[in-house]
View 1 (cartoon, rainbow, N blue to C red):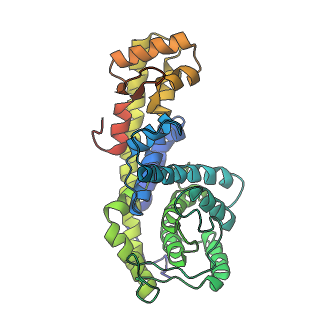
View 2: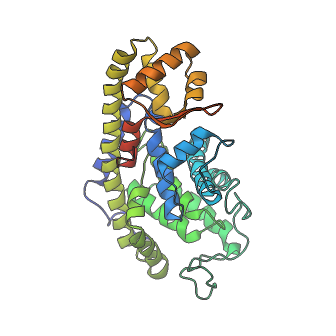
View 3: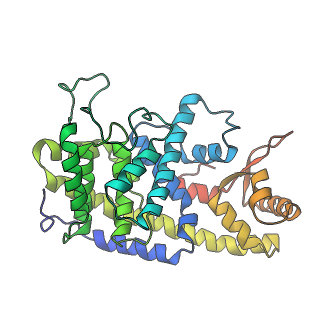
Length: 358
């Protein structure tokens, strides 16, 4: 392993600290940054081959399991993987309130990640009992690009891995880079290792108190630099090149901390701006309750808003109409018959996706 004394990346810790300061300023950050959590799930899953966008995931979720018109079976499978990713992060955070980050949490998180999706037949939550390898489709273990350690060695290796998670290293961010690379090298499960390895990043940052919630979004960097990401990981296993991997990982941490801070700051500014706007438009004592509701569900059905916004149906219908007329929310599917209309909060969605998707 690389010595944590000799690898650094200028400003990495300061960038994480500034991002954490922004988290501290956001009321109910887990709600307001919910779209960023979904976008992280989208990008991490995209590294593994899914194609769905954040807006598609949120629309599918809003429509519900019984209203999936417009989604092909393969697309629905992609979306379920992304929703599982987000659910596994949230459940892992609940476990970490009582448990240390270790094998118990990792195995349970993997079980949730793989529940009911492609790979569900590959023993979710259980370490592999057979060889595994990585390479082009159809390759053999002899022609694979990478073959992790044998299954018989996994129990001892995972015990050593767990011990290192809690080791007292001088640089926690370098330690995290080593943890991520070691997990990918061990490849303890038959499927889902890449996604789970990236989930460990915010969990470690949070448990080690570098950030005040498991809300760190690193997959945008890895997805944008996918080829180098895999090459650096492979170089660790093939040549023991920990230094170049650590430099790459620390650059990812710094750049993503800065991007995360910028997006979180913009979302907080949007929330503050919308507080005044929604209060003025609605002239209602429920303005902030409504605003919080649409921040948590930036794509939603009118029936869900009327049923679950904790205000009377008549008031909910009036406020929905006023938000539409003010351009705060936008219809994306007309209602008709027994089918509810679908609405989006474009300003928040565009901020999270980093593009004018609406």
